[in-house]
Length: 170
Image 1 (cartoon, rainbow, N blue to C red):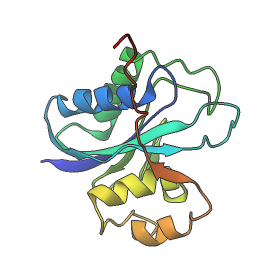
Image 2 (image 1 turned 45 degrees about the horizontal axis):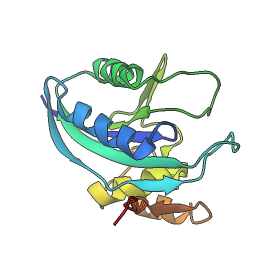
Image 3 (image 1 turned 180 degrees about the horizontal axis):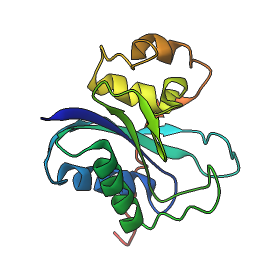
């Protein structure tokens, strides 16, 4: 049976927008899964450890036959492929993938809690999530839209890539 899963993506090192876009391509190719779409990219200030560059965030949606644990393992493999190094909590990173929702699953086991335990408090998750699923309800919480309204003090903006200026002689 296919289940809809939502995955949060974030990066703030080594061309973070490109890291997130490449990770979306890799998620789209996961076995036993069908790509449903990815949100726009958003820029946000770091949470927790503030002395680091801003993040680029997005959310991806896919239907999958993979179990939550198998999907998480595949996501960890993608992170490793992107050079993820877990030095300390909330550290700068080349790529962070979080399994946000897996259907209506609501459970906790070692290293996996669904829905993601802090997603309902984070505008950088809720804004791109609402882009993909405007009527989404987060199990155990509320609809995503009113949850986003409660995060109005958090700065998240649609990412605008820097303009590339041609250099050289005319």
